[in-house]
Each structure stands twice: as structure tokens, then as C-alpha cells.
Image 1 (tube, rainbow, N blue to C red):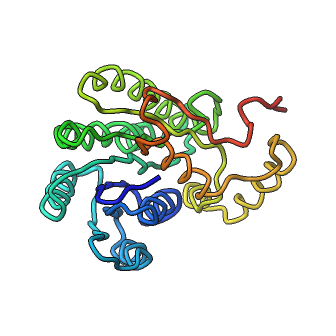
Image 2 (tube, rainbow, N blue to C red):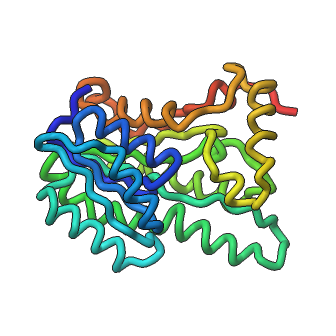
Image 3 (tube, rainbow, N blue to C red):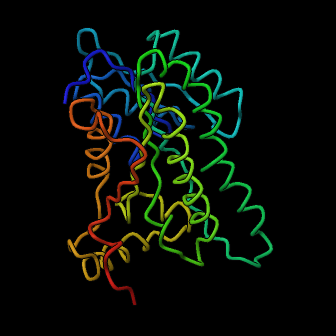
Length: 258
């Protein structure tokens, strides 16, 4: 896979899965746009993309709940690189308010706005540039789009909506030469769970759970997702693939759950 000269915009790429995706695409030759809400973490990822001739990493602080921020993100990308070849809609949040809780509707609004609405805004602005480059889109969803969890109901609903967005958009954009796919991870070793719950023991709990119950016997790593994204972005390996919902789950969708 060779991404020399390509420009990849990855939302939520200042940490975790998004960071791994940005660094992977960079390692394959792409120019990358690193986004997030923390200037320090953005710069840390930019610094990991060591300078090379004819290859650049751009950091842009962006709050995806603010449409103007998204407009500025796309504008800065075009000003810096002149085009966009790859859009990875990675940014998202995990919320755990349960149905009937006093804060449930607040959680619902925040989850849908972050995990679904913001992606509509970003994608609408980027598609005209992808039409020019015959580029592609990869949405980062979750195996929870298929696996219900009543403790994370709004998250499950948001990811189900994102999967349908992927499939419908793939049909609409295929005649324009734009491919649209989704990568759906199971549990991945990031700080997402701790951030969502405030329980710093939760990641260890999931690590043990995955070792016992996942067919491949381990928790996923951000690099596992990044490799799948690189595969789908490459015209060499995936030129005839669009509308795909790709599990990266260690076999979790096939296991018997207790």
C-alpha cells in the first residue's frame, strides 16, 4: 500500500484509535491532518509524524459540535494541501446514561450530535473534494451497532445509524467514484472506557473479559483498527469494495455471550 501524495483527514486523531490511524497512513506516505480538542495532544501526534520531503502533518484544533470549527478544519486542509483524498470519520464519544435516568436525554443529544450529526457536517463539506480526487471515506463505527447493551443504549443507537449512513452513502457516491466503508471494532485498548465512566479499573476488567470470551483471546489494539482502515483506503487492496461494514472484533460477533 502506497499513499504517497495522498491527503488524509482523520477526525479525533489526537489519541487512541484516531492517532493510530493517522500514524499508519503517515507511515505509508500520506499527508495527514490531525484533529482534536487538546492542543498539546494534537502537537504530540504531529511530532510523531517525523518530517520527510514532500510529506507534511497538519494539526488543527476542532470542536466537532461547532459547525464553524468544522468549516475551518476543511478550509485549513485545502489551504495547506489543495485537496483531500481520504476522510476518516473517527471522532466519537461513549456515554453510559441508562434509559429513564434524569440525564438520559442530555446524553442522547450529546451522543447523537457527536457520533452522527457531526459526521454529516464533515462529510458534506469534504465530498466535493473527494469527487475531484476519486477518494474514499472510512467511518469508525462499533460492533455495538449490532450488539445491544442497555447500559450504553445511546451509543448503540448512534453506531447503528452510522452503519446505515455508510451503506446509503456508498450507494449515492459510487457513481462519482467515491468509496464509503466502515470499520467496526469491538473492545479496543484505549482510554475511552475510563473517560466515559471515570473508573480507571474498567480497562483491566475488559482486558480480562476479552481474554476469556473473545475467540482470539485478547483485547484489540488501536493498530488493529489502523491496519483495517489502511486496507480499505488503498486503491490497491480495496478498489472494488464499497458499502462494507467490516468487523475488527477478534471474533466477538460470533461468540456466545453470557
